[in-house]
Length: 368
Image (cartoon, rainbow, N blue to C red):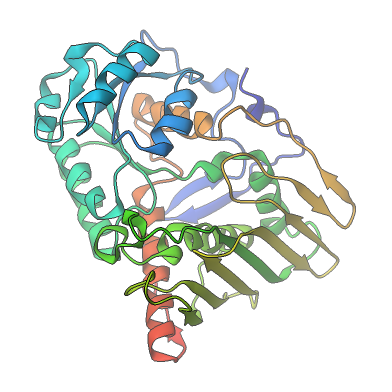
C-alpha cells in the first residue's frame, strides 16, 4: 500500500485550473487504481545525479510502471545501468539514436532529465515518437517554450506532465489543505526559500544558456510553487531584487534573489533563493495561527510544525513514486495530470515576471 494514500484529515477540496478539478488529496488510492495487464515501461533520458539517486531507485517501487529503458551519451553508463537494473541492450539509446524509440513497444513513457535548455527538444522528439512525456522541472527556459511543448504533445496525442514531486508529498498536501480550506483563517503572509551552495563554474546550472537563469529557475521555482499552492491562487504582481557577489563565478545570472508576490485574496509572500547559501523553508501565517515546513522542498523529506503542534506523516522512500504512478494512471485512464504542462507554464510565466522586476527595479503585473 502506498503510504501517501492514507494521509490523515485530507478532504477533497477542488480547485479550478483550465476548468479541471485538482483534489487536495493524493491523486489515487488503492481502491481507485486501474486494473492493468502490465506495467507501463519508462525510459529515462539523461543519467545524471537525479536519475541515479532518485528516479532509478524510485522506479523500483512504482506500482503502475517500471524502468525499461535509458538514453545516455556516455557508453559506460549502459553497462552500469544494465547491471544495476537489468536494462536490456535493445532498450538503450544514445541521444542521436533517440528517435528510434518510436518503434519500441516496451517503452510507453519517456522521462526527460536533461539540462533545462534541452527539455523542449527531447519532449517534442518523444511526443513525435508517440511516447507520453514527463519533463523534469523547470519545464523549459521560457514560458513560450512551455506553450510549444504543450502544443506539440497535444498534436501528437500524448500526455505531458512536469516532474513536480511535491504535488504528491504528504506534508505539502497538508499545508496546502490548511491554506486553501482556511483551517486557521485566511492566509495573510508567506515566507519561502530554497538555496544551496552550487558555486561550481563547470556546472551547466551556472551556464545561462543551458540552465536558463540560475538559482531562480532551478531552486526558486519550488518557493514560487509552494506559495501559490498554499493559497490556491496565482500571483498578480511581483517585485524582485538580485545580487551577485562573485561575478567571476556567476556570469549573467543572479547569485542570490529575493522577490515578493501579491495574490488576489490579499495574501503576500516574500521568498529567497541562492546558489551560495543554504535555505529550505516554507512558512505561512493566517488569521488564527501559523504553519511551516522546515526543511521543506528537498527530496529527502519535510518536517512540519503548526502553532498547535507537529505535523507528522509517513512518507514514501522516494517522493517520485507517487508522482510517476499518478502519471501512469493518467495515461491508463486518459486523464489530465495534476502536474500538467499547464502548471509548468504558469511557473515560467511567474519566473519571467520576477526576472523583469529584478532587472528593471519596477513592480511587474502578471496578466492571467
